[in-house]
Image (cartoon, rainbow, N blue to C red; front, side):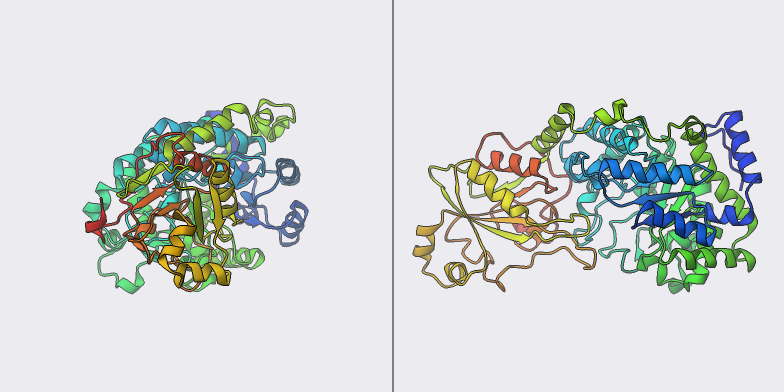
Length: 572
């Protein structure tokens, strides 16, 4: 398949094309195979370099987990000095640079941005994020999430998306991609062919986008076409099947033999490259996910994903073993040298577009300590932006009992019950209920946080209703429910073995706020007052308390149907 390096999304000059071609020709077969790999490094830079040297691997890039700016910069400097071909330093940032940098900003989940109804907010979020990431030496963001959140039971799309409305997702994804690119990062649309239809998580199985070809063209196809037309540099392939197109391109394929996009030759060659006209880099989603590993034996799957269209192999189960699998796949003819050359050409072209060779030669792959990029951290402008997003996004979904605003003089005594609020994969620390209680106290309320003591269990489950009313004016649920990385749903578990259920909803006021999963009404549809705040951050929690107390109005507009279609009689 021909690659036009002068065309979208690379736009390379003759000099840059010459670097790509000369570099490719100067690489051994082993070096070319190494360029397919983008590992996750969990240890130190020195540990990673030692491992690569021992096994003879020269990867295309690397991704580190969260660290301080100083440590991140030191790691990227060491790696860039160690490897002769500049590395693509990648990051998986979806809520701001705080996802990878301790000092970075956190503007909140994509759904919160969409609740502002202003795509320009997404542009600013992307640009600010990119400015901070590039200060640490990052070049490539695995975002924005471009999925539609069509299934409230899906635990992984959820608030990571811009919602369920097609035009909203297109507008916000395009705007954020533009901001990320203007800030200096290459951009990735994910998760092709589209997550959010299936109610299951591709981390645990090869999930299914069950849309017909016509439905897909009218939804996900439009999203990807818009981003491709805008020049998106890469697309992340999910471990997600699209049976309608798979069967169209390969008639007669039994359902059990349909491969997910990360391994599907027809999807990559015909749908992505030919129909959508994508000329950029295809990268698998994490190859350690069960959606990838359950489909084929790993020794076959590793080289097959590249032969069938992917250019970059993301993360590993065991780096040394996977490198051996890829090399053996070339030796056995599973991965052809032609496909290998195509993949490495695109990888080098992305590096050339980002001007990494020139920056490496000039010693500027990492901005200087006194650079404008370094001075941008925690600037007043960014602090104001975080507050603006919080103010414009928090959404009052319903208040049928006309409870709000709360008045400390009339509803002084609040019992706050935490739902979830435990450490999770995307939210490494829990315990945000403490900050919520303190924010309410700052507004003049007396707050008691439910702690599962026998006394509190008795109050809620067995005390006289008149005694409970004399003790508390409002029962407030603080929902912070997201997947922990090992579960397959994000649903309410009532503390105290059902003691805290809203059983007395007809006796005294109940209020629920959610700072993550926006669908908690699914498990408590008769809660009369419900608010979505989309992300747990100190700024959002402080702003939420201010709005509860009537210090500012609710401005957000829900990007999804928070009621779901299961409970039409409680929609208002």
